[in-house]
Image 1 (cartoon, one colour):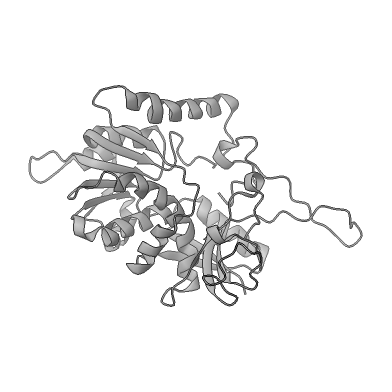
Image 2 (cartoon, helix red, strand yellow; image 1 turned 120 degrees about the horizontal axis):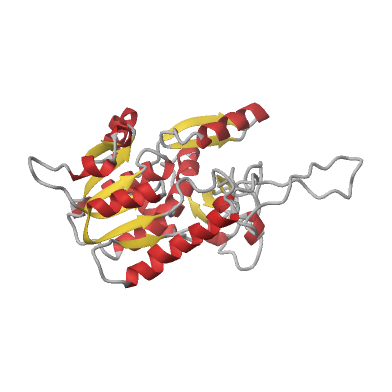
Length: 330
């Protein structure tokens, strides 16, 4: 989303959710607007604590914290791709001594989204659930597999990760019990293959990719009454490009249909959840840090010139990152 906002493709190019053009001020044009600073997630050291409403016993100068500022165009919060940013108490959490700055920065966005996914899941968990994670090797999916494996260890969950075959060992190493390679055909065929002649069915499908094919595959392998929980919705990789007005209306209509109307109609279809978390979910960060659920960092780029910035964005845009990409300020 840090890339999608300045490119005006955030949520498919939805108006009112985009950033204004970047304006570069110069010494001879003092009346120019300040430059647009994008970016949402960050970590660093507190340099000042301002305001009577801040809990100064919990947050102090010199403390290591990580957090996320909400979208600048809607919430008017400060961007984080800079040496300094301004944030709010509700938007940060303390970084334990055992967690590095790199790992904390990599965890912020995944845990923000995972907080929304787990809010739904935790209301339904009983134990021994069979779970599918579609998009298990990316930044959010890989952290979700780790969280399910480590923070729900007492529930004996069976986790199947869907990713490309080249990432199979990586996802198994995160705690998945099984991996299905989406490059080898419709994933529902492989997912249904249980032990011997057994047909495997699942209780929960977490969708980190989006699109009709993900939903169709999830629907095909879920038990009656199962849950399909998506953080993307009916448009795969939404934000990669600007949607037409027709496509945008179709996306909104499908979200309303699947998560609203269809859920009220009796039938064999799964219960559809579209999650869009709004708060940081500090309890999720606490659980992750306490259980040493640390994200995998694929690559760290120094944030020192435009070439490194372009390389980092192109790697993220490729959807071939194994875990997270981090930019490091000097």
